[in-house]
Image 1 (cartoon, rainbow, N blue to C red):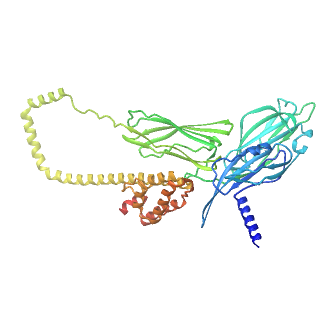
Image 2: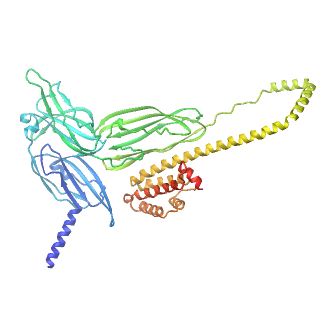
Image 3: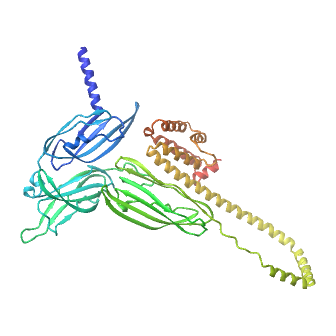
Length: 550
């Protein structure tokens, strides 16, 4: 009995160890031209890339992708790391996926069978001409980039009038990348001339995507009829967007940079214009899908996008697109002005996580216009005095007459003056109301913008950025308070749930930033905003509700 229990315990321990790191294949029987997807998963968070060098002996690595999978339960939070590697066999026969090490755990080897390519799949009889196509991944995010490499193996030189036709993937965009390359190589021990062309495919719908291979057309001649050869059909899975920003933007890319160029004049006057150039460079997206960068909504400046330039180029990582905006800015008054920060959230498909690019807020000063000199000339004053002295007595008579007339109309003038003062007071009051409403609208716009920025940080589970965005939002939500820290926010909110979530945020900032989840904090902040609107439903903006409450 004791031996049986010991055997069961050893079996359970072996099963647990196997479950901690495991490897699976999408299939175990393929041909020499097929791709293979190896999935390696471990019950831990692994940031460093594992050592995949044991695979190079029998396989070519066409691409890899890491995914973090998090789950919550009563026992706590669990994190798993999954790697997906696309492989192409180097030879035929019985091959083996060797054991790989992840987080000090070794996966079990997997045996596969690679068969020869039939003549029908290899192209013309005798395999003298055939296509060998490959993809960098078997799944891709919608609107993301899928790299498709077409290689034509041929023994004889191609005629100059040979025609290559790009692959077709439904309604997806297909871009040729660079020039067609020609070189020599071997396939299964035979020498071939190789013509290679790379394409970038951008799917626009989720679900399975069928890609019809490229075609080669050799025109009819006196010695032969029209020859047409087509590559194999491939299928990939198009994934849903992993995250959309508050502006509804989804940018899956390999790399993204945001730059600016501007130099406002030092002696700016109201009505003067200057330009600001914004440049967005993205690897893995077409130029037409890049969003507008400039924020043209401003109460104190006229901002207009004067010119937009879109360019595309090719690199070893795919399509590189650039959007360059020339923005004209004209301040409408004098004083200190601020251009809002430009925030852009995008999805890094290599790391499979959200990232953030931003340009900080820019400030500039506009000088007040010079005052017009209204002092009259001294010579004119002297001439007027001399003229008055020569007619002194006549002036006394005129002044006496005017005094009598003024005395008779004094009561009338006094009553009109009272009425004028009352009208002027009403106009000043209306002007003050308009000014206050404009300030309220500006504060409400700032509160909405900072709330959206806070929502983005919470959705990305970025604890450090969420702390900064939370303070900025609180300064606009409670403008009557001097809020500079998380403690100030708790004092202003007087909410026990928010106190607990802020304490959790501070704890994660000191312990482990990667374990923080921002969904509960976002719900608490949204609840505060809804409660204010429910308490003052007649207010047009949250800022007006605050003023009525205070």
